[in-house]
Image 1: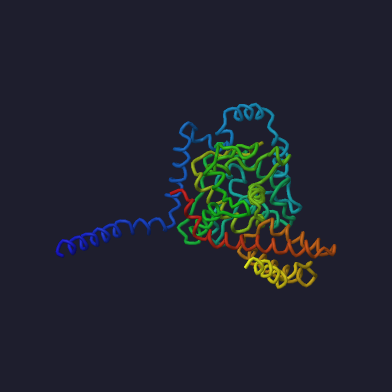
Image 2: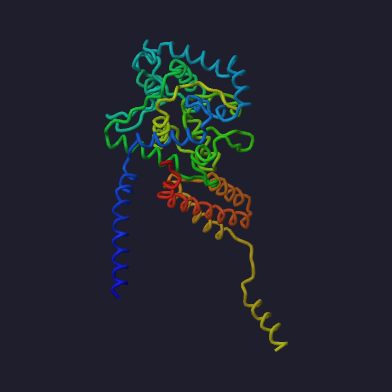
Length: 287
Length: 101
């Protein structure tokens, strides 16, 4: 009897010790910690693909496939996004009807600032993307907003990305519970399965980068937005980050959200933050 | 005993409701149920494209007077919408299993 009591007491003590040791970890895991998330995110890809140079992840599928990379490097001599880049440069410099330009809306005249977008606007309490800031600039100057998914918006962001090429992504998350909530919401969106195909963003871009899905090689999630906007052969044209999210949703048979909805803004915030330190490579070209 | 089995089967068959073609009322009831489920899915920000297209197919069949096909499509749309609602609710916690930590 004594032996049984001792065993029971010992088991209970062991269980209590185990609970005491594990419970702080559970609490810590539930706490929003963007820095720890970014570190874990980057380490996952660095360890999964040890042969890929860290700065090369921003080149998407080309970092995963040597043949594709060689073809892309040749294409870069006459890149398909060049027309959009030239158009964007001209549009950026052309004054609005009131005489002002895009440069008046952005720090440093809008040159070399792509790596700081999206940012958290503490006045609005929401994430502001570059595409949103561009349209707000237009509207503030009496112009009609552009479509978020292609054409003019892609050209403008292509030019702005080009002026930031090589600069490391530099997204800040202020010490504001709303900013942390936006980051967490973006993370949740990224990992949540949706659509009839039951895919999350992570199903393709975390679990399967480098694998083929039909004829395409899937890009890693790390640095996936650093190359935006992109010329996509599949689209026969340019596309913005908004377009990328919309088409990803459609491909999983989920009805896409409105471009620049809170969810898309937040997932852009999350993906950009976890790519901090990796260079801007946009505009890009993809199959 | 040998004779009672066929008799019992005959009785069962005669009592079973005969399959009949769907009418407009069947379609309208099925469509209303499917539409309600579809709206719930949209409210959860998790509408499936297939729910939308299947609902549209139901409307098109009904417009053409094919209520069998229309009712079947509406019921399929309801099943799709319900699956998307289940997905949205289960993913409220399930997404964490995918997270890189």
